[in-house]
View (cartoon, helix red, strand yellow):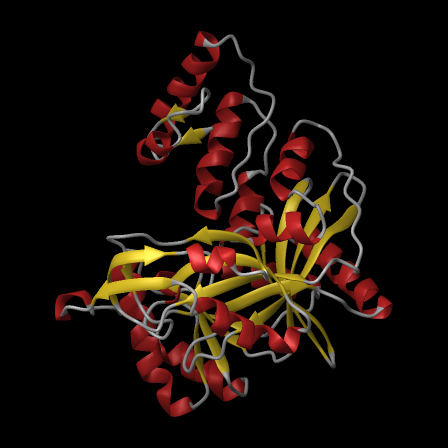
Length: 387
């Protein structure tokens, strides 16, 4: 396990953890090479489950002469403008999009493509910076918000992406790509929490079930999307939307689904995405069979309606609930939390795996289980500064 010094300290009881500043490529290469010599090991593969580490992993793989996605495939999946351009060129179904460098670009797009519109960074993961704009008169303000966020939080100026809003059922899937085939390992539907001015806030993941015709269509579109991005081997995560008029790809990542999805998969179907990815890297095709009849368990995000610093938090009542199978705390004492409206990532108190009866009941289940988290916060004025 190659980890930052902070993460390595958390994993110090594990015998094979390498501590390095992974952003310093040359020193990391020297450190991992010496580690192999000292422990009489030979590296046979390399992978990462963190999107932000894809570039450095590709570079390290080249130095260590290990198979990994080439730098072009990494760039094609990490840059949403590039992803859309390649999919559009290949005729893959994807929402109409445009790279925005200034307000004029945004206005021209909005004149050509009817709203609502989705604004998102070119790079990055998750839905932290994804805005939804329903009214064209609010585009200038949304443009400024996006530009300010990118420059202040990521140290990167615009451009960003504006995208046509597509309404439908949103899915996430893991695909296994080999030299001669593509197969679906996981198909998960999302319950998205309504949040004015924002999009993509996941309240729950649950087993995805579609008709045989729609499933065949999905596989065709998945395969075309993979090939257009130059992905040749590995387990790939894809987000997509199924509508009455077709199936639209949103993005792909060169890793299995993250967040609470690995736990969700283990409880719903027995599929272990981490083990499967490692087996594939070792040269073994993982024996994973997908079916659409997984048991009714969901991966839930339990979020706060508060802002401030956590002074006490207890998950015991949540863990003891008969519906709950597993709890993963996302925050602890001393952490700052925010409401979902203010900062989605900082609003998640915990993820949990729980039984449910019907997807329509998920909002009620989320609310009930969230109330079982006993939490105290300090809401001093200086702790309420969220963008």
